[in-house]
Length: 236
Ligand SMILES: Nc1ncnc2c1ncn2[C@@H]1O[C@H](COP(=O)(O)OP(=O)(O)O)[C@@H](O)[C@H]1O
Ligand SMILES: [Mg+2]
Image (cartoon, rainbow, N blue to C red; front, top):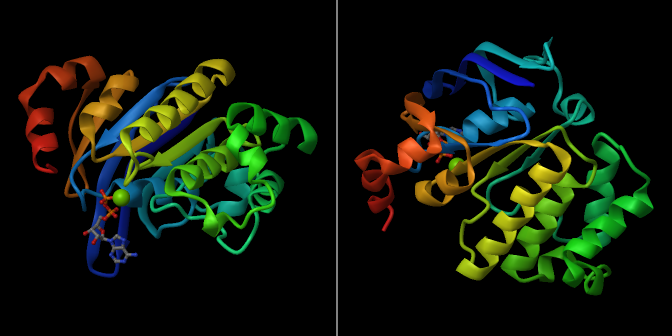
C-alpha cells in the first residue's frame, strides 16, 4: 500500500506540490486530474524518487521510502511510466523491455515476461529488433506501458498516457492497464489532464490545483460535478 503524507516538492523557489496527502486504493485505479502545471508530474516523480522532496512522507507497505533512491523503489515494486514517452530511442524494443525488467521487481522469468508483452501487443513482437525511436507514437506508448509493467510492479504510476495519441490508441492503452490492474491487483495512480477520461476508469479521484488537492472523492461523483467539466473545457 502506498501512502502519501503532506508531501512537498519544490524546484528552488517554485513549489510544485504544496502538502499533498493521498492514499490510492489498493488494487484499483486512482486518478489525479488537474490543469497543466498543477503539479501532477511532480507528485508522481516524487513518489518514484525523481523529484526533490522538501517535506512530508511516502510510505510503501508501511516502510518509509521518502529518501530511498529511485532504483531501490523500483525493486520494492514501484514502476513509473513517465510523461512524454521517455524511452531509450537508440535501443531496440527488446533492449528497452529487458532494461526495464532488470531494474524492477522480477516476479517471473525474463522469457515469461517477454511472452506476456508480446501476447498483449503483437506489434511489439514484430518490431522487437527495431530501434524504439523509429516506432510510431502509439507503438512507443505500448512499449512504455509494457516496460513499466514487465516486472509485475505492485504500484504503477502513469503520467498522461493519453497525451498526443489517436483516440483508438488511447482506448487500447487504457484497456491494457485497466485489465492489468484487475488481473494482477496492481495499484494504479493515473495522472491526466483529460479529467473525464481518467475519472471514467478510476474508482477515486483527486483534483490538483497549484500543488494542492482542491477536491477528492469517488470518481463517479467528481464526474457529475461541474468542476470537472470546467477543467476539461479549459483544454479544448
Ligand atoms: N524540473 C523543473 N524545474 C523547475 N520547475 C519545474 C520543473 N518541473 C516542473 N516545474 C514547475 O512545477 C510546477 C508543476 O509542474 P508539473 O508537476 O509538471 O505539473 P503537471 O504535470 O500537472 O503539468 C509548474 O509550475 C512547473 O513549471
Ligand atoms: Mg505533467
